[in-house]
Amino acid sequence: MRNDVRALYERLGPLQEKKGYPFNADVETVESLLEGLLVNKERYGYMSCPCRLAVGDRELDKDIICPCDYRAPDVEEYGACYCALYVSPAWNEGSLPRDTVPERRPIGRLPY
Image 1 (cartoon, helix red, strand yellow):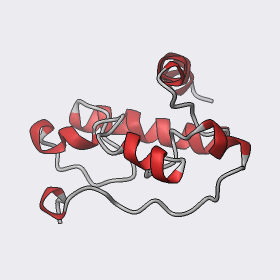
Image 2 (cartoon, rainbow, N blue to C red):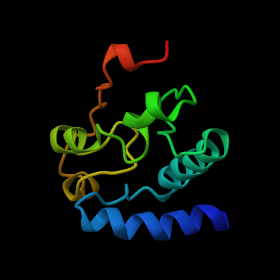
Image 3 (cartoon, rainbow, N blue to C red):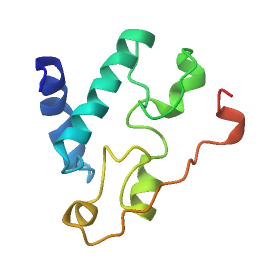
């Protein structure tokens, strides 16, 4: 794991786990998503969700800055957020189905 990715992993993991949102147990998936967050931070100046298209305007993208506004309802309903960076303990344990999480972002907020 790259040093910058490891630092982000070590910083975000414990903070979000305290809030009830542990990282996905698949470390390769987490590493890839964290790399995407860092790329978006370099590109836009903020860590927008790597699984969504950002427009590069912080105000327009504020709902998809990680952790996005949709994480809590996604994890509550599906056990994982849209990109599966954050999951529920039950999801990590394998006691929930790994269903595809639908996009909750309203159509008017999508950049396409």
